[in-house]
Image 1 (cartoon, rainbow, N blue to C red):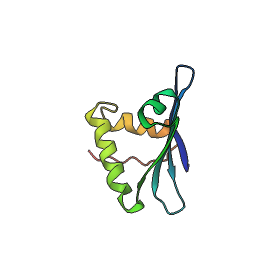
Image 2: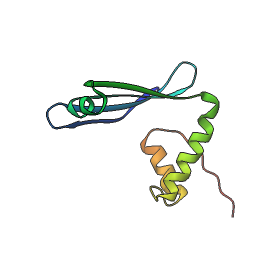
Image 3: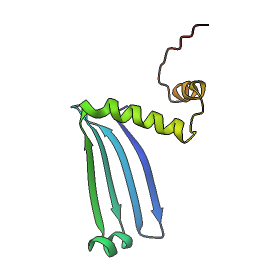
Length: 100
């Protein structure tokens, strides 16, 4: 997977907000979005606003680890089994080991 839509929201008749996450050919993570509509025109003076946030590939491991911790801190996952189940739901292979 190289691209996933984070959100695609509409508000009223004209306002539209989109954010995608992309891994480019260099392995960088790019959050790419656009906002369109009256709200944007009021705020920016133009009805179309596009933006990009790039995280270099060498920093993605840190991003990943912090995001996983945030998921546990906010109880999106309460244990490793729930995290592993989520991986399965997304079709992401994993290996589990244990020792007693």
